[in-house]
Amino acid sequence: MEQSDPRDDGGASAADAFAVLGNETRVETLVALWRASDPVPFATLRRDAAPDDTGNFSYHLGKLADHFVEKTDDGYVLRFAGEQVVRAVLAGTITERRSLPTDELDEHCVYCGGAVEMAYEDEHISVRCAACEGVVGREFPPGTYMHYGFPPAGLAGRTREEAVDAAHVLYDSKISPMMKGVCPECAGQVHLSYDVCADHHAGERTLCPQCDTRYEVWAVYECDHCKYRRASAMWFAALNHPAVIAFYHEHGLDETIPFRKLTGENARFVRDITQDVVDTDPYRFEVRIPVDGEAIVVELDAALDVLSVEHA
Image (cartoon, helix red, strand yellow):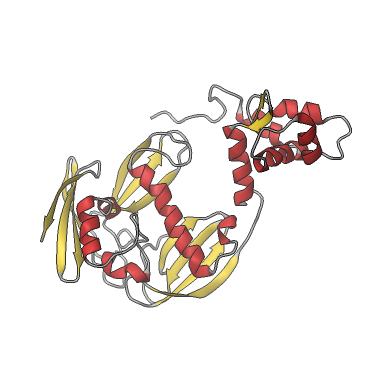
């Protein structure tokens, strides 16, 4: 499929859009409009955004018009593009550089019950087990079972444990629409593919020597437009089915769906899940979900739609 060119989207070029934002007065204007609950008259906006302006405010406001800012009969308001810019600034991803050194959490590994450590670097939150090999090796530190882009603003006012919980929730808020074919970043169409290990052998504490991961099948979701990409264990797709939700609820899961999957608190609901490739042309999968001596078996097709659910 042909890749989109961010320089040719039918509107302003990316270079022109970034050039418009390359001025402190213009960014302050967007922030002032974001803070306002109603349209802002010109004089009020100039006072709030550029109190020391010497006559150039009209010029700067004109540069923002039509794309980032809209003029109404009652004053100026932010357009959607302007809101996106302000939210990117507030998230801290493009303006801040924070880090947290590795330290132990009040948490236990989903798989072995060992001590868990967390670090934050380069806008990514990382969680690893100090006793087993975790979920994925490859380029990640030993024991990794979470490595996820997380805005610096997500750390504010939260303990390490609360930040990790927030990262679980944020991950699900991104992967859930992708499972339905919608990119959470640009609303573009999402393509589903699979990373399957043909000779998978993973132990309770070790990763497969062939693919260097815990799971035989990874579902890979990628936006056709902006190329935003996420990979998840294939069986994640089975957990939102009503029969699975009811099964978990009957066995004591009291979190809302989607629930935080890879946490020590919810370990008994996920650590023993197994998956099998039943067919490859097209793909068909079988996921077995055991809890407290009972189990259900979910069959999924190549689109990860549920074909059947049976109690084992």
